[in-house]
View 1 (tube, rainbow, N blue to C red):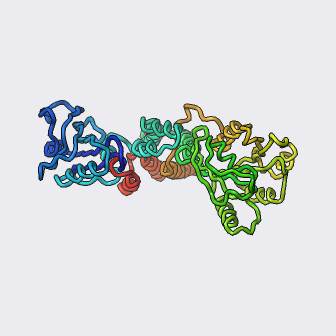
View 2 (view 1 turned 30 degrees about the vertical axis):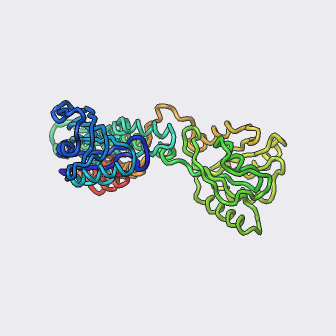
View 3 (view 1 turned 120 degrees about the horizontal axis):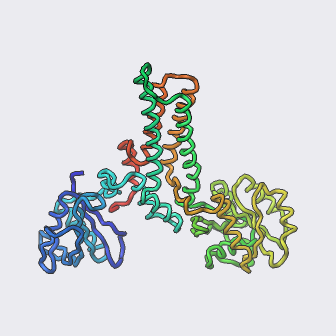
Length: 460
């Protein structure tokens, strides 16, 4: 924390602008060595948050490396709450690296992954939920995922979690009164009152955990596989959902021999969509490999879109597919209804349904595609998502911490009902308080902090 750190904060490659950032107590002193203002302005003594135009120079050989815009931001009104200087240079690999190397030669240290954000956390600028939301913002695959991440950066989830921790502190305080003044005329909470308070907290924890799967979906996406016999319209369905011709479509069965994977946005849900080889017995060596890979992917995928042909009706290949997908979450899709009504096939599929919705479509005519997208949203997240539903747990670390807290509270409630000593009850409640605090970082250990920020990129 005493070092002044430096890193390139934009992606390496060619671009209009690149940013090299330094943060720490010597940031401004370092900038004095390398920056020459075009107007010879005294930028060191001016107010914070000013931009200066000039050149970045190597102080050793006096070589001009690039023309830059330098932004000076003085503590504590910065991201890290330290002095921060950013050099906006031309966005090529060479000028950015030369600027970074010069700063390192002048005494800065190369920042570790996520070290700027880590300093923001350690200096009280962000809590851990907000810090983790920054990575979610960067990696957001849809607008809905971005919306959830931004709400966490604003502190909505942190406020909810802190409220639970405050309630737990209230339970601990009540237990302390009963423990410290057992014989005196002090009105501490009764056993029933303590149980009622614990139940209220457990309900809040359960509500957050319940929304975790939906949050994970918007953060990470859903692996989705399109299966069906050859020439049923799998590739055409992929193209229709993508709104582009990504997969080759012909009337020759077995055209798709390998897995084609694309990511698309269905109602804000990132779908990692895979078009696979048609499932059938074949002597073609390459196609046989594709079929085997499809069967393997079926075991791992989250969602199955099983496509059937209204024209050919139920065949032996379809029966085999129905066996493969029986235990999987998914939808049954009857294609080519523009050529033949799907009711006959629908009746047969209903016998093997397993509570999967059956949808009629014509991929070539664009019939039923919007309904299919709505059904995908329904089966994945279980209904429409309202604006108020943005308060999701999106991180498995948060879920694990809350489940541990719930386990301790369940033990505390059971102990109260059995008449155990309130000293023992207080131990479980404190453990729950610490578990909840791990989410925002108020009770987190250093190894957890290390693990979190190691997932960040250098420069963030």
